[in-house]
Structures are given as structure tokens and as C-alpha cells.
Length: 186
Image 1 (cartoon, rainbow, N blue to C red):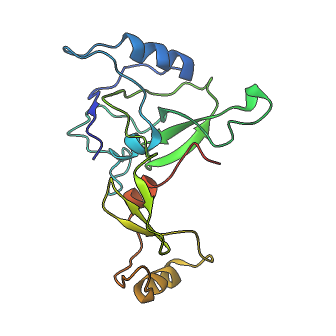
Image 2: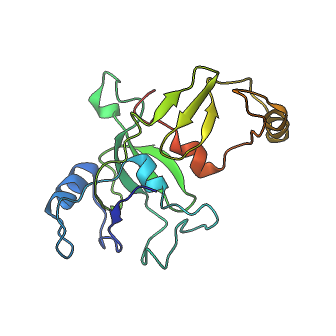
């Protein structure tokens, strides 16, 4: 999905966010250097929502601890707060697979990624008919938002929706939904 190479085994220690940047900068595994902290969408790509504590394939990623969470490279959407001491960074909790905000001074785990950023910027295209096409996943999304619904109402809404010449709409699974999130945009 991302084309990244992942650090398989994590460091046996925790780091604050600033030291996490230093850690990956100095990291060499095999012949590979130029590691980095993953973006939120990238780290979510290795979350296994069918597993818990840890919510990851432990055969592919042995030694993954459920807690504390793992740093991403991204400030949370409240990064524009006037007081720098209130700045927070996103981290993935492998206990549940959730994404949460933490102080950059907190001690967290690090799992680095190697490869080109999977930034979402240019992969979403408005189709001009109330839909958006995701060139990375091949999914078509309803553009904009609708009224709040409970889960069963949302299923019924999608199953009866005709939009953009399509009538085969459904609710997205967690990874599909997270794939269109832009954690930089409040």
C-alpha cells in the first residue's frame, strides 16, 4: 500500500519526539540509511484492526509493544496554538490501533520507515458530480459531509444512495476511512 520498508524490530527504549528525530537520523539497518518517522497514514497502514494489544501482525513486526504509543512525524491539527508548550504530536497506540495527540516531551516508542513519503496531497480528484476519486486506492468517495447517523442508519443511507452514476455505495472499513484523513488540516 505504501511501498515503504519498515524497521522490523523496535528500539528497546522510549524517546521524546525530538530525540526520536535524532534516532532515525542516525539509524542504519543493513545497507539502508535515510530512515524517517512515518506519517500518520503510513503507520496506520501496518495496523491490524482484527488484532488487539498489539494491533499489528506480530510475525511481521516481532517485539511490538502495545504501550506506550509510537511517534509519527506529524503535529496534530492544533499546531497553530499560540503557546508552543501546548503543541502536540500524533502517535499511534498499538493497543487499539487508535491515533492520539501527545506532548512532544512524552516518552514514546519509535518504528522508522524508509522510502518516499506517501503524502496524500495530489491523489484525491474531484469528479465534479458530488464525488471524489482516490487515485491511490481506487475508491470513490461522496464529497462533503452528511447529517450524523448511527451505524445502522449510515448503512441504510449508503445502500440506498445513488450519486455520480453509481448505486453501489457502502460504508468504508477503518483503513479506507483513515486513508483519506489529512492530519495536517484542522
